[in-house]
Figure 1 (tube, rainbow, N blue to C red):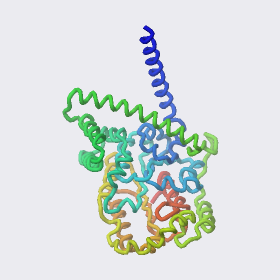
Figure 2: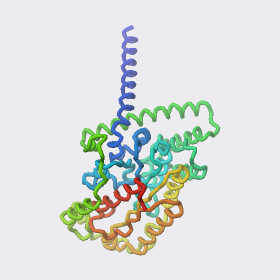
Figure 3: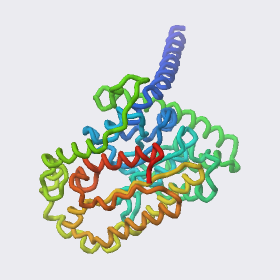
Figure 4: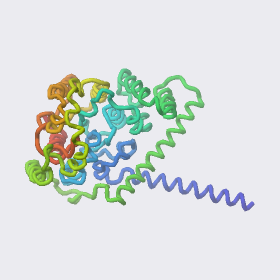
Length: 396
């Protein structure tokens, strides 16, 4: 009898704990939407409940990659710059996120978007010959987000098939995940399945939903405890917020750059110091890159992202980030190859009706970059202004 009582007590405590975690996680997921939107930890971008539950007001999703984790301790980064404005971008992405991942996420969350606009910050480094590599795609893959993409009836058969085929190819090294999403695809797209298959998929989906909420609450709390979660707005709710003073911010960036970017590439001195020990190895290393950033599957993945926009009625803007001209000249990466890459992005944007914030003319803008590839002081100010004006309806 004592054993039975002990078992029932343990079971009751387990159920109460599970219920408590469920309600705590549900409450935490969509608290402080503005803070969540500007939060830059990579775990955030894996959460369907977090992204879809916090899209509010005039927010638009802004997709990118590792640049979101660079410069976020400066006043020029969107996570700080937009805290006093009347506009909040939902920053989505981290290192190894590229066009295909963002196409899946956009398709999953678009029905939660209050404003039918989105931005994709396009990095030249995505367009290496391989495109996104399988390990990188796997590390940034969210089955919950993928499931919601499959449920989006606005997508054409061609677009879904492209995503499914590319995903199957890139997940080939993760047999377990690939097996699960093949079952998801069968059940969620209405293919013939057995009763046990459907039950297994439903139960697994419920588990993923709970895991999604709890993980989001955990990472959010961890970021808060470490002081890495955006603080409360600096102006009270209900008061007027001000458009950022772009001229003042550029002047601040210029002045800071003159002090902190005193090297031949005009990047942050700390970044230059890390580069210096291997700098001799970089000289002339790209002299044969006549087709650099012009081939590979990333261009088709980018078109897939824009097709998702077209089919769901979302207006896109691509941000064309340049390369650091000073550094790329040092490595002898051909100017002709760089210009050909920029032109390909312009052509894809034009053929898909996407607006383009084209910063290719800023290759030699001092203090535009933090390091060889990531946006820095002036870069973030200029890109943030383009995003702000697009969201307000005055881009282009």
